[in-house]
Amino acid sequence: MFERGALVHYHEIGLKGRNRSVFERRLRDNLEAALAGMPVERVERISSRLLVRVTDHSRIDEVCRTVAAIPGVSYAAPVYITSRDEHDMHAAALLALAEVPDAKTFAIEARRSNTDHPVSSMEMNRRIGQHVVDATGLSVDLGDPDVRCHVEVVQGEAYLFSRKFPGVGGLPVGTAGTVVSLLSAGIDSPVATWRIMKRGAVVVGVHFSGRPQTDDRSERLVTELGEVLGRSGGIGRIYTVPFGDLQREISLAAPPDLRVLLYRRLMIRVAERFAALEGAKALVTGESLGQVASQTLDNMAAVDDAATLPVLRPLSGSDKVEIIADARRIGTFELSTVDHTDCCTLFMPRTPATRATVAEVRAAEEGLDIERMVAEAVSSAVYRDFGSPAYRGPKRLPEGVTAAAEPR
Ligand code: ATP
Ligand code: MG
Image (tube, rainbow, N blue to C red; front, side, top):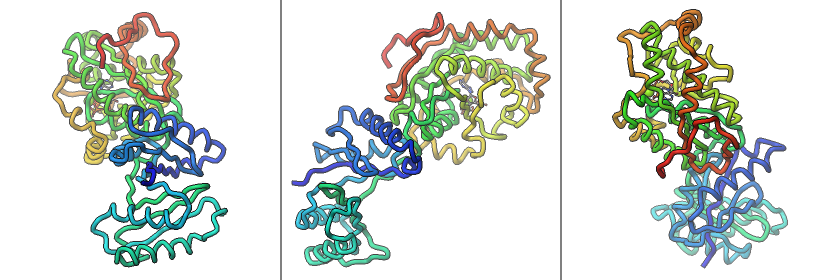
């Protein structure tokens, strides 16, 4: 009998002063994209929240879950939408409280966004609370109730709810610019990508596969990872680069212990080409300090020497247990543990350098035609788009770069 909706709360956006309406509009557009095909009306902005009216009430939890997964949302609440008439609010409070079945104690928490409503929040708490006590036998506990029924009164209507779906937090994708993420099919880089995306960046991935020296399994896994990460609206595109022959070339010309670093430096340069094309302002990797031999401070410095853009390492201070917990939460862990050959393990020496210097890696590159290698890598890239509402691809692509043929 009452209309229903998902009430969307966000907190960080409120801190952004003048940018506020930009942020709200971005979040609204991202939510609309995520909710396409679901039984909802347009997303409305209502005094520092968003409201999505749900037309098929049986699917309201599904709508809330979808909303809660979008960066920028602090929580989504399945609400009963009523008039500001006292009887309506009483009836809706009983329905909202009934959604938490085993509760014995409750509290009403009313809040008015418009002081044009004649009844104060305190008085509303008291009146609705009394009605609930009379109708149900539940008892009031203001300190530590089993359930809190929130009543939010705005211009013209009121929203009542007693459940919340916690959101992922962060900022709406598209409010922090674009980054290029070096995305492998491993555990770490999808998590690093997610963390940066959650801070409002649109991500363009670049994946290097071992093809033609290996099969294309890592490419297919990265595409699937892109789909999982893309559900939150932050993956614009992923470029896949067959890298095996270039690695072979490096391995024939360079000292074995520096191979991995030279692969990385070449990857960084190729990623920067795509960054320039996409207007991206930083690169992202999944490195974590000291996790493996190649991730020492010396080696990071030796790799960064090949970069001109900032290289963000959102996992640098996280340990594996924390990273795996994140991977499970965001749904990438299963895919990241499927067996595949990572291109970095191709032509891998027994003892990779752990403390390379910039001078050493530069010297090792002297015999290589780096410019040609970068150009070759870029021109053999294949890309796929992942439907981010905040992403616009470049108008022109370098010769040779093509869209993936098969549907994803
Ligand atoms: P991951 O779990 O992300 O694969 P890792 O623990 O295997 O990382 P490394 O192999 O040292 O660590 O890779 C470090 C980072 O370099 C990765 O997190 C990723 O950002 C980048 N990288 C490594 N291999 C590739 C690849 N094949 N394609 C794109 N980026 C890669
Ligand atoms: Mg890896």
